[in-house]
Amino acid sequence: MAVRSKSQDEQRIAPEAAMLGVLALLIDEREQRIASDKGAERTEVLLARVGLSVDDIAIATGKKRDAVRMMVNRRKAK
Image (cartoon, rainbow, N blue to C red; front, side, top):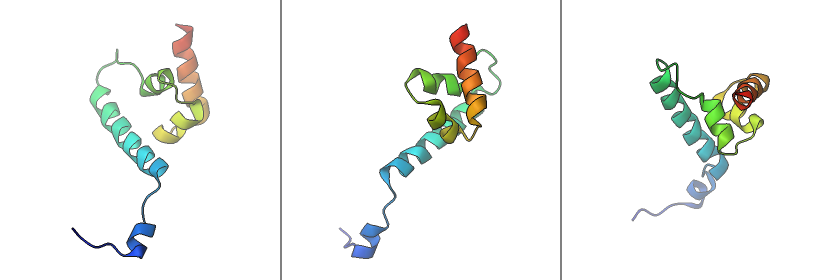
């Protein structure tokens, strides 16, 4: 087992930042997979359905808040 110095322990990534990074990678992978499937549900709508806020979805997807809000609201109207 390697011995870690105190400076290495202080350089840990914040859990929230790590999870956001993982989420961004998963979103990117999903977007690439569904690009040709016109019937697939939008990633933004899927994330909203599981409880993420419009602001959180915008941050995770790199899209504008208003664009995310419109996509989610359109889906709710159907």
